[in-house]
Amino acid sequence: MNDYGFATYDERSGKRIEGTVNSKWPIFGPNYADIKRAFRTIHITDTKQYSYRTSSSVSLPSAVRNGISQYHGYEKILVATIPHGYKKRPLGYVTISGSFVKNTRGKWAYTRTTDYYNWYPPSATLYGVGTTSGNMQSSVGGGLRPLTDTGDFSVFGMNPFSNCNISYPADSYWYMVDNYYTIPGNNSSQEDGFGQERPPYGVEIDDNNVYLYRYYYWSDVYKRDYYNNGSTTVWDLRARMQGIIDYAGSDFDVTIYLCPYSMEDLV
Picture: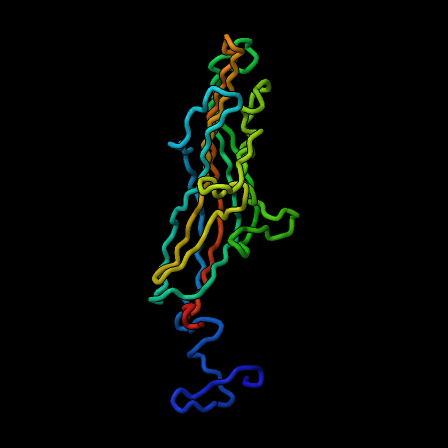
């Protein structure tokens, strides 16, 4: 083996021992005695569905044309805590693979407060859901990629709530319906997770445990279109749109591989 870059030295004398590889100090993996804590696979079936969120930061927009008040956010939920027993934070990595389901659910609570000419549809509350699914595996950066090349960089790459398939009335004003509204990009912390890829699940490791987290994403948007011709309020339309993205129905494996070293051991 020493002809291929491996060599073993006696711990006391420091002399090189020919023809022997010492497995006491593993290079690429765990000690065999630790294999159960260093390498394991757990199976997850996600059945959690979340309710719509109402933000305290969102209020009725002013009486103007095409007014909007909005808040977008995400929540990070602890799913599993797995003790690793190393008494320090070990180096390691995690792979995730299986069948994933992305549910985009929307609620459109529309109020026709004033409509002088009766141009717009009456008040209504409508619901819809869109589902995207596929067999995927984790990739560098924490995202998911299809197991086979579909031409789509990531099935879960974007988070527009226009995918919730609400059937809006045909004579609705275009600005007031969610089909014409796409979640904005990541230009403030409250919008983190929209207009860009975010993972459904994530893993963290500390001195004692491996943690598995679930993410879900939500939006609360209040729109108003108001018009007064100088003497009469011609129309006053309002729509509160709420959306949730979760991953109920996903069924996947999480494989954890830990090495018996901390980062400090290798510096």
